[in-house]
Image (tube, rainbow, N blue to C red; front, side, top):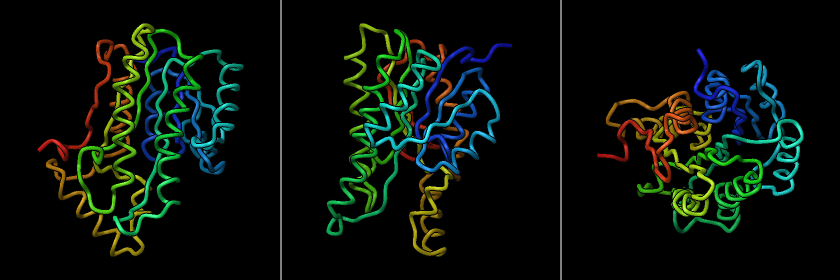
Length: 250
């Protein structure tokens, strides 16, 4: 039986671990040929080895416009088009108001907002009419979590992009949607605390806010991305799909 993305060409930025890697795996499982990006070659090599086939890794920093130009030039040469773009690359660190530095602000906005914007804009010439663009945001775009204000603001910007771009691209029937994960068990969590005790405290807190009583798995985001990328979501545009176990809903 043909997969939901049979014959599609897809890009997953930040695809070497966590949500990006799980999504790339799901896309390949559903018949797509997938390009992944990341900043660390060793992690990209591991991801390619894990997925095995129908995947190409390109070392690229999503916040570097030169890297993006090189990426899309390669995809244009090799495949000629991009049916699905999952702008997933992003990240953030804790910084409460009063301790926010210019460096923290610039780093977070450059990756999560500027990088995502130019990833999509530079991909546009390769996306055929009727293509699918998926943006990765977060429940923090609507939740007020301590020490997360800059990161949360970037994710609110991502949500806003999907609304405007749905209108910008309506003549081309390109669907732009957002996935907003809740607490997901990914390597990024390890960077949120300085000690094992701090990390456990953060994990316990994140689990406590989820009505389903557990953290999500990267694969659960990947499955949602497959849905939005496929013809199953043919009449869905401009939405924010919360994949959060109910954390931002109740």
